[in-house]
Image (cartoon, rainbow, N blue to C red; front, side, top):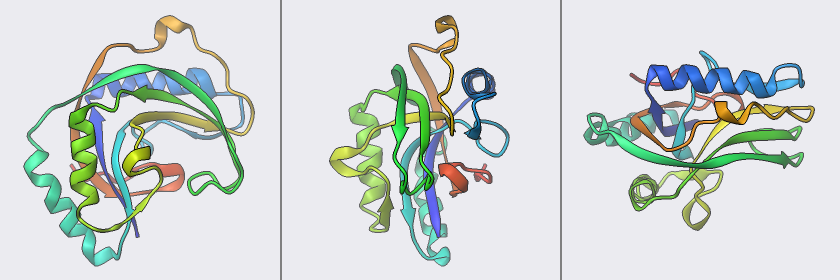
Length: 173
């Protein structure tokens, strides 16, 4: 089962990120845009594990549930996803917010790697914190740059099963 630990922004920030996702991706053959079943998040770690072991991962998040984590935005990235990608098998156009790999975020990533489950995606030395805003089949548009967030986000930890395109339709509260 694909399962993940993520950091979520507050409701107001999430709404603005959903709006940005749609401003960029609407009308460009969207494969995934942020919304109710695809909430904005910064991934700590995605893993493949037996379903009966997800409770242990969720329990490992417990000490972090009352914490607020800071994530500093680097900027907006657009890139092509080649066919055959785990999350986007057909390939497409990715757009998202890149986040500084701070010592705090890296330590969280390493902590959850040590649980020993088979990791999915970029891990270890290649861990790249980000918020996927969307994936489209056609080239996405450029939003008004004044709508792209800058600075530091405050995030809280959640976990849940991974849905299509690396989304989290059912995050544990």
